[in-house]
Length: 189
Image (cartoon, rainbow, N blue to C red; front, side):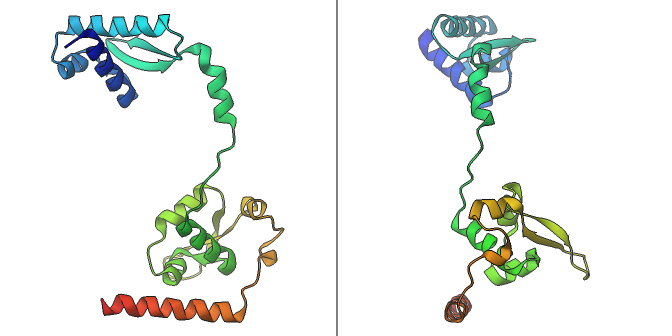
């Protein structure tokens, strides 16, 4: 194997692992001696230093790690400070609409309406700060009650949940019939 192939393998290992990797493990993965592995790492490290690269290899007590060069930190800080845009899938939007229109609502009530487990969707919406725990239901087990947040109102351009568009009676009946048909199809299977 050529030195470039070993370098590519070391680069892939350090990138994929993220944390530091012991020299002995790198050598074992490449099926070469530790001294040869150290030489490969040194060549790769020198290449990072000589090229205009944002990466470097650092040694930490006999282990090696692929890291960002200090000269690139300002760029990382700028990107980290940018607000994250969260994508709302159909499942998340459906769960969010149930919370918005039925709040305060428990996870069990959401699952009853959706007909499937919603733990992941609820957790994701809490993480996105679109819904939050607003109390506990006075019932056995004291289930958590969920409601929308100020962030939800900002994102959807309403001042309160009362400003959400009202569903007309025909739509509600249509949805009810579709849900009953889906349930019937699942029972027939």
